Image (tube, rainbow, N blue to C red):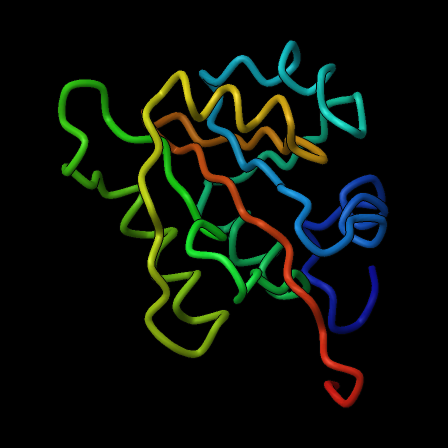
Length: 150
């Protein structure tokens, strides 16, 4: 245990978050996502795990991870097949965590399922969660931390 660091963030996840640079993508995936096969194609090349609901994982990650303010797709969700505008409860919960972490309303774009898979393959890493609800899959693009930030 470390003070000030969410205990969900294990050593492997902390190492990946620290190693990532501006513009790198992080995928937070539900239990149904093909996480292992996709993770093998990422920069990190191996799957990371946090066995907790998606919103709890997003909260933990976003406590350390700045979103990219220079692009409009820094926070993305996998859209529901055939219902791209529907936002299920799991996505609403993660949206609340994004807004809380950023201190303001932050747009989360939707990405069609197969386009999301392609973005995930190009990501830095994939964290598979214990989220069992469908469409609990998200992409976060890393931003920068200003030199004078705490």
